[in-house]
Length: 376
Image (cartoon, rainbow, N blue to C red; front, top):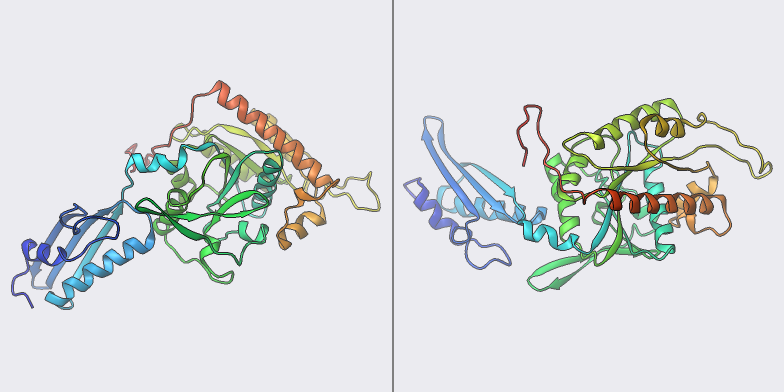
């Protein structure tokens, strides 16, 4: 074991470590930014700061493991802290986005309003209209898109493009989609802190070969938390569609979601509100409408906030069944659900065209904390 604990000796050990795809070791390539050592009555300590340009969790984990192994060979079981920060070069960030014309966030203030159902059916209808469409499922802790497309048993494959390995998205009903659900068992809980979830989302954005898309729909998790902010820091969102149900508790939470998008530091245009589960019409009484969850809550909210009401979706058993069996209800010929989504989708396209005509392109946001300091 080395007798001296200092920066020079540690650098010598780390020169035996490299990252796949990089020429040179982690010292020569500047991946290691700082090495700090400390010896006191409590023992010896090492702290290492590193920066990598890949959001892949396995890349960071391998780097940490390799460093720990190298240090243990010379210093044994020593108190070591490794800080790995992901910084993706701006040039690399733009590459997968240049071929995507419109990025639309589909959000909800609360869970259980059918946001993922709306996302998959909206995407399917757009594809049926001839658009090139993709879905990015960012609901890391409760991914629904694989189930709703019937692709939960599939696994994305990887291809080599130049020096970079890219993931091929799963395609169903002419819609490309990527979800953390393809990398975990259906019964497996994703137990991650926010930073790990955000790294996974970055990887699905930048390491997926999306190709050319007219629309990318982002299925956001419910609420106004860390993942929503991370997505808007990562992607230039064209506009947001907010899903609600008619009852007051859902409408109240939607107000918070819209307030998030309208916040001056975020400033993502609201394309409109979609009301799901608007009314129930039994098959034996096709002319009757029963407003089980209240009436026109979404319409009144849209009018109150000065945003477009994009349409309402009836509460139909086939909509639930289609999601469970992996075939979007919008594919059902001559059904009320298909007609509803066709009209809503036309309205979304019209609002997107208006937004692009009247407003400048959205830029990725810089989130500020309560003190007004920029958070990178």
